[in-house]
Image 1 (cartoon, rainbow, N blue to C red):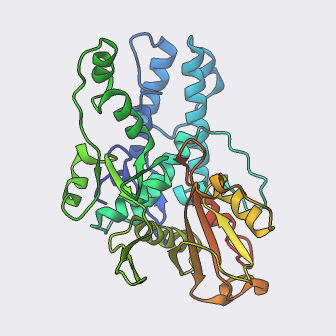
Image 2 (tube, rainbow, N blue to C red):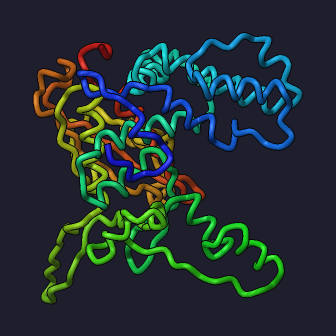
Image 3 (cartoon, one colour):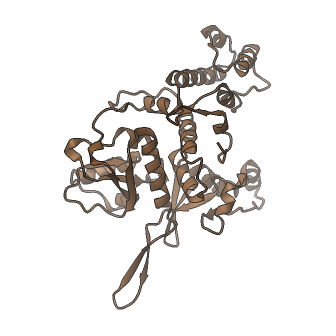
Length: 357
């Protein structure tokens, strides 16, 4: 597998006959090299010994006493969390099975690992889905499944930018700690502009320095006034919403084995509305309120980024009481303008006839 998102180790994963990703020792070694687990000059002998042992055999059992001898409590906690994650991943056998196990349909799941691990697993899975793709729009949209986004508007466009990168650019001009040092010293900070992804610059997405620095246009459509009261509405040919819908289709197919068609829509005009799924916490609450007929404040509605219409290719793969009915999806930013998409919602909340197998 090509590694277009660096440092997640997709080339170190294997595939089982179903196409799901199997962890290997080489994949686990990447976690040992992360800042949370990497050795520092202050690391004690017990930490150094465990790190060396795991580097040689990342899946070997670790006795509780090996952690108790750590002098640094934070280091001990970091290793405890990693080992909990590692053991769960190895027990599940694949990244996909582990991910599904974190979010059981009956709602009894309890997340006992940091969100970072969940995002890294989701990123590797999405990478596997798109390994054969050469579409920069699709890749950029896929980042929304594991990296929070900051939404802004510019000249009538709705733009999605990587939260971490956008905030860094606002603080330092995009030059990291050195830029922050210059700003604090009152010196001029060099400005590196974020770019809206388009056909002219899409090639730069594949360059290492360009990743996460592109803004994705999530504008629904372009309207042109033709005079005489006529308005011509044209859907953007390179819409980030379309790209995101395509990624979500592949996500559902990969995990659930069902074919669905997803397309962005601007409103729900359906008197027989029966089922909806929020793609984040905010849109879940909003769709629930709209479905129940509760009044929604205008400023809250304005935070809705998009709605989507999902249709099953085979209605017999749905619950009998809603077979053939569309499923409406929502994507919404919070009051701070941040979107945290939860792709697991599509896996546990679609109207399937039975539990996941």
